[in-house]
Length: 319
Image 1 (cartoon, rainbow, N blue to C red):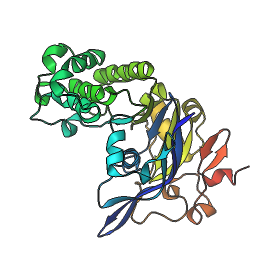
Image 2: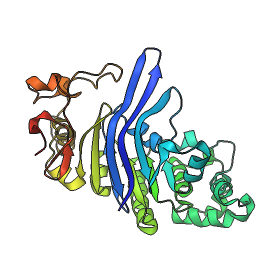
Image 3: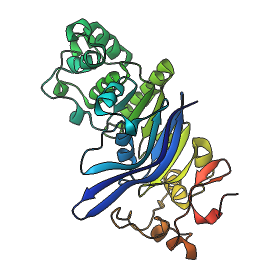
Image 4: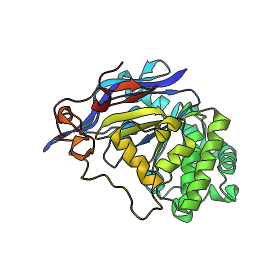
């Protein structure tokens, strides 16, 4: 059963120098209990997509078109008060940099307790035992002491665990993770990933996991969506996408993992395009080694090939 369905979502930033089409006609869904991975280069629209689901896009950004259906409700149609009820309770988010989202002058445990205060009208002092238990679940050492620590007194890994405890406090149905391990060293990354797996099983929650790390996504996700310049270029089962990538961009990304220990590392020539003035036709065609005549003239549709979605003229029209 689908817990989230995004249909033809467009999120644009209206700047003096032009309109940045950060997310430009993206559609996908997340099933109950599923982990969807989203990957792509910086500027592909991943984080904008994540923020738009929670309606956290600020001016000059705007959701200009599309639907975000969560448990039967279109979130784009809800008031800000209605969205505040959903954020944290039904959909939560773990951000990339905990230093940005933890108040530096407020004790960490009290910040987590505010989730209960906001959604259950509970007094902070009455829920500290719950926060201690949350800290135990996310493996924060000495939790009775740590609830009274300030963010600067915690390591990077501990701060990220505190954010995760905040995200799972009310047992949400959907957890969005925006590069949650990118600022951590490899050992801590593995610990956080294992923790997230445990949380997912315990809560039976669905997750959207955004990362540059394709190897990490291959281990933790059920489905994988590859984005390029605000568009979806490939979307399907993680195993199938990794074993047999269809889109040239996906193939290049995955080859960079397969050959990481070889003498020569495959690269993608050129740079990602401007989202104010993207190329005509397929947005990847200026960098694509397999381009042909139609690629710079007509934008390819997202069609179904071998059970997955691919946006590439190599495969013609949908059969």
